[in-house]
Image 1: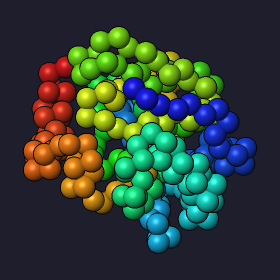
Image 2: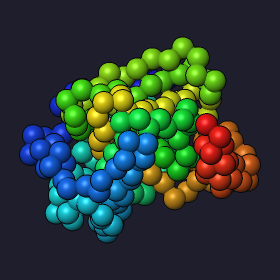
Image 3: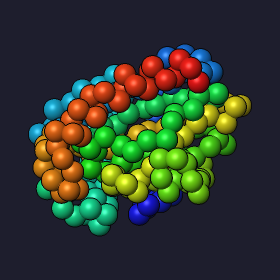
Length: 208
């Protein structure tokens, strides 16, 4: 998987701000996503990050990530519509399964917030989990890639000791049809697959 790792990704004040957010209690086998969004026209949706800090995050990070997208997948850069800044807390015993990201994610990124030690992102050669490689956890480390249908399989989980809190920072598009075309995918097939997958995951999770 082609990817980039950037240490000390956030400025100290923004990193400290995100690490001190008051979040909902997440149990050991749960995951919770605090969704925050800013569009290219400046409109915002927030749940845990203040509008002021969200705009500052976008101002500080946007040029860096757009340039990463142009480097990793230049054809997709023109599709950008909005950015997600999601605070995701993973319970210490929770495992998110091996997956490829949704087609509307142009650039996928994660910045490790806290605790000081946990597990990073695990990359695989395929959906069967062959040849796992971990992007080591380091506070304020950013890990970025542009999804590809067959080569961006990954997962993450808690380390069994402490909950895992990250900023998931994605550059997004509303034009999934053109994103499919760029990757050489059948739009109708992908649309059906993405609609069905959440239900399949919930069904099979009952028996894991």
